[in-house]
Length: 396
Ligand SMILES: Cc1ncc(COP(=O)(O)O)c(C=O)c1O
Image (cartoon, rainbow, N blue to C red; front, side, top):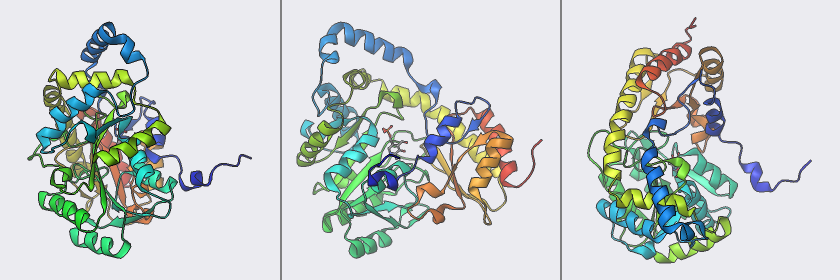
């Protein structure tokens, strides 16, 4: 009956959003979604910051703000997040955004026309694929191994397709949990420069590391302004605040400001103040120190569950951080049927692999499991039930 825009034919509701709806049923143990643990939220601190900020500066906070973002947050982001990661930049290199999701949309608006080619990891974050599909962007997958994108395939595809952009999640990738090694990071910066290709580096998970050494972002190797770095406070402080940042050359930031004016004028002042003050009070390192052991224990419980309960021959990646474990089942499983059976009979949910791929058939044997939202005990119980379904064993 309604004559919707053509771009809406290119996207369907996100599989993850549909699964998040299931999480409201407390009986279901959901390994879908990608939410931080409710217990991780620093509620008292945020309450204190908001009380004080409104008392001292309520008029400015409740007024319209500037599109490039709350100055104190942009400064705090540089001092506490960008500089320690080896990035040299100044205020004109930063805009705050309404979550990294908005950054992906705005960067697409600014750089990509219908029909342009973007290279993506295979698999990749499904919401980004949705944004590209909605904008009629042609996504070309780059082959990956257990360490992420394979550089020879990347170079070959750059030469063949002349992409305008590469989209990469180099650290604790969604959905695979893979972290790209140092040499590949350097190589990406070099290829971007050589072939005049933009890189959208999406890094919402980098600070959620449970083992191993931190690696510098691709942006830190960028000598020619080809890399755009997206960060988010969603996984480190709270996704409900809806605050993230883009770091790029000033010319790019100016274009993003125009695109953002069209989208939402500016990100909410109050939540930007919360993030700025959280950083300026020096609370982020202590907060991460408090939450990472919780996530680490949950990740271990899930890895243990795969070993103990999943079918023999299941392949999986052991991440060093982030929120996800990616597994591939042996044989030719019907993932959608398994998901329906798992939810209906055993009250466990996961995300099937297909929506994370440009060519959905590539994900027919895969599934993504999120470990952050359940206690180790519930993970053990959920994995036992899920293992039963995946192995074709009836659970009474
Ligand atoms: C790779 C990746 N990028 C971006 C986002 C979106 O984050 P935000 O809440 O900041 O919009 C997510 C969230 O799951 C993600 O996994």
